[in-house]
Image (cartoon, helix red, strand yellow):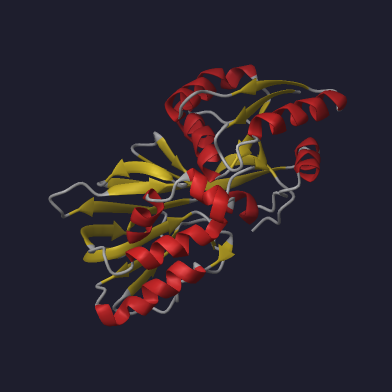
Length: 297
């Protein structure tokens, strides 16, 4: 087989180029050929992948959810997929963790060479031009993430998020938005809107698995006396799934979010800054073919 090996040189610990060379050597020993594939910025990376999909039998992605997003976005824009092997190399690897992709390099390569494919769901927005591999968020959570630099993630790991969260916890106002989904239509003052394609946040289980729809958790109508719920979320990644006047939990296949603010509200997708509202987000069940030994749901 002819593999493309795609990597983001700045993701995770910044050693993905060296990892790509190791993978190429192991593929060669197994009788396969490969070619490194990278680009100086996300836009060029998506374009390069999109335009070269017919050249390869499969693609191996090295990095975290943000790197996987570039690959999945290229697949969406090309309206074509090829088998995807995942080498977790980011600071947070929610998608890889969910689908039981090992972080050990040799084990991950062995999984790819075993050629066991599973078609799994991801999200899309912007008329199918932008993928959502793991998560989309806006509100305080996105504002916290926007302040976290890659160097800080490398130095402090996941601890940097609660540290930033504690600093921000009483400083941010809510966002007034209109949310529409199946059997749901409300205008809300939202502190945190979190949509995930898996049941993990920061590698932590926060809801029961439901692999054929999104998990959407919304903290809204917050008051000073209810800040402990936000603190609970920031520190643990968990949300209590009991419906109340502060927390709303949905499992939609399609959801639309519109801003009722004068200013723009920007989303954050798979760890990187995303497009501004309004957004219509759809779940693409079984879109992405990945090599995994994970259990089928």
